[in-house]
Amino acid sequence: MCGIYGSVGFTPDRSRIDIVEHRGPDGSGWELFESPAGPVALGHRRLAIIDLSDAGLQPMSDASSRYHLTFNGEIYNYIELREQLRAEGRVVTSDSDSEVLLQSYIAWGDACLERFRGMFAFIIWDASEKVLFAARDRFGIKPLYYAKTEHGLALGSEIKQFHGLPGLATRMNVARVHDFLASGISNHTGETMFEGIHQLRGGEALRVECGGRPLELEIRRWYPVRAQAIDISEADAGERFHALLTDAVRLHLRADVPVGSCLSGGLDSSSLVCLMTPMLARDGGSAVIAISACYAEKSVDEKPFMEAVVAKTGATPHYIYPKPEELLEIASDLTWHQDEPFGSTSIFAQWRVFEEAKRNGITVMIDGQGADEQLAGYHASFPYYINALLQGGHYGTLARTVLERNRYHGLPIMQQISALAPRVLPAKLAALVPKPAIKSHPQHDWLGGSAIKERGNPKGAVAVAEELLGLPAVHDIASLCMTLTYASNLAMLLHFEDRNSMAHSIEARVPFLDHPLVEFSLGLGNDHKIVGGDTKRVLRRAMAGVLPDAVLNRRDKLGFSTPEQIWLQGPMRPAMEAGVEKTLALYPELFDVEATRAYTREILDGTRPFETTLWRIVNLGIWGERFNVTL
Image (tube, rainbow, N blue to C red; front, top):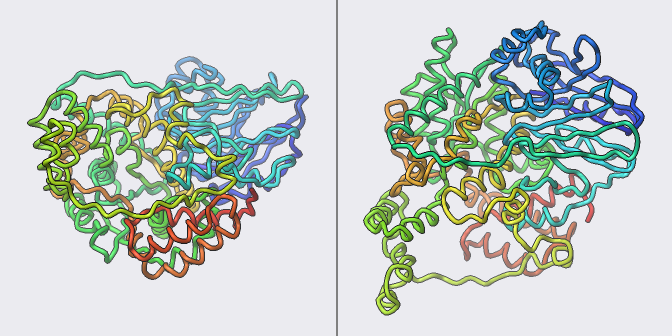
């Protein structure tokens, strides 16, 4: 796990790689080359994970000095690929996965991408053909940004590496900021919230011929957005899922440094700790060090589930207790590391988990990102499931779902029946069903500023993302999982994970995103994902007997949540009020100022249902001030 930089045409500036020293404190490399399009620079900051010797230093060249690599990530199947390369007569001298990547590109060209199991973002300079090639892994686990002006092209691991480039202003991309403020979604297109700075999306590659000016970028999708339907029994699906996840965890444990795990107490992270434990024991390792965020507020505290996992596995627990005053102290620095504003204080909880891992000498952390998206783990998936039951006439299962959602999730039965009545009963009978009293709240056009009206995104964030990837609008569980995995949630969560881990010089690994597992999961039908009040049915089946029953049978959904409502309406209220005013002063053109103030008062007074929108408004101002972003 590292930081990378590459440029063509721009005057070489080593500070572009040194600004991300936190991504790679174990080594630094900088190489310059010539091309008809101008100087070529490759930079690298190393976090040593596999082969800790100098053989893993970068930029890395082949024996002929034709090809030069700067690489961020891990190729987990590097041992198997190394044997294939040697069988074909290629010389691979080190134990580094970086050398395997470089030799794979030399041997198989860009078709090598399809052979990799891993997370990666890399740049290769072909000094003979004067071609720059860059690529990003299938799901965008590792970041790769680029910016192009009349002066040249630059690529890097973090957005901050581009600030101050000739011809590039630090200006807001209003359409993407609109998406963020309105829906909390980011990283859902190739654009960022900075105008002129883009990202390769997961599964994309970039090629630039540097034989002259102007530079022309050829961007293609090397990993297609797809899902192939799989017809399989519940028992067989659980067995297959278990085998795929076990193999993914086995590969993700390959490292020459200490490996620990995030543990939220949910199904996903708990499954990983339970699978890691016997593998590490077989290799003569110590117990899994599991880092968890806990709270005194019982509504979000998952410590009992964490303790159940610890008791079953013998893991060594580290419990940390994030506090609101700590968030206020580091909010600016946290935003600087994230590069863009973030939508919830849960990012702070994750930050503290990685901070504790660093304090305990852990360099690699296993985390459970990705399972919810491919397995419909969010409770917002239920309307699509219920719609499928209605369309199929499965009224018995529908009744079971209503009862189990009441028992598992606390949803009142009459509230559910009232919502279903117009769809299952004749109009006269539906009118007789009592409707729960719903308190109405004032509607505020708080995002009604002139800049939003002129430069915002009227389509909505998810619609734009689906359109760019050629995905249909969400209409069932299958299309929902595709959108969450490829177009919306996942890319954003991976951004948060990468920045929070790398801020502490830690490599975060996500076994649920091993692509054979993802492709299997996305091909499964509804009945392997939601059944009655159960989410992630196939994972529960796969982990029966492996997870402690308390975790296997839990149905709530929290993750690394914080008691955000309690914090914002309580000890953080003055800071929230001041933060809203700062954002309104910085960017009045985005907002209806008075409507935003009224909305803020109602949220903080508790006179309307709590939403995370308030933090988004405040964090936008923190971001704008820290990076000096103009409209």
